[in-house]
Length: 313
Ligand code: CP
Image 1: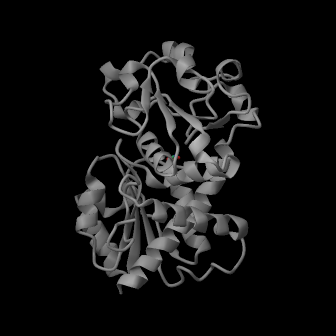
Image 2: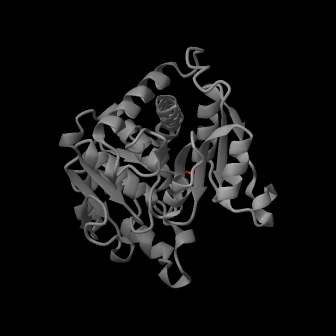
């Protein structure tokens, strides 16, 4: 959340560890009791707008569930049916919804840099959460990944974590790596074909273009989707060659990673490309747990933002 009062969550890199810890601790309480009525009024009387300029299933619906469970009204204009198709700017959309009393904005957008621009012009007394910004950040995904890993392996400092796949175009990799590094993971590896690795030092972690080396003795493996929508035709990898070199299977995990290595993926998964379909049945595959935890984590983010607005009022 932003330093001068938690009014925005647009990236995890600048977030103090204490704030990250308090969101995760809050998420624990929501997870333990998220069907109970104790939290129903936290956002009572508030409206939350979900503005998704890119497709989404997990993030979109878990933000909606989180807002509803905290008692908020939810406004979720369809991009193709909103006045944005008539030329209304996103800034105007926010100001218009704010004029109706909406104070919380959750936004997904393909353009890097747009969240900071929108945050700078945010109507007074309102909050903004990034639900995914270009290749730059997906902070609530980073939080829920860290939350899920910590549930199973609480001592993060002792873990070897490999993020495998199209790291270069992945906002998830950026946010999850930032969260894990902040929470004490020291052995963080970014693994993928050279063409899909980021520049050195762009995000925390050591670059590795050999899969076997990258996942050797790993405790946690986070597989990524190839972000075809963020590549030019010339950049698109040959999917068959990718699967042969970097696709994860039980056999590959058993040969190289720790026997009980956890497997995560932010979704949506291209089964048969980055992950063999058989891995869905593995007891160490945490993909559904990530999705379940996403609701509690997003409830916690709303709670912190609401408190920030109260504190600033
Ligand atoms: N992980 C993730 O962002 O999934 P969606 O695109 O379905 O929201």
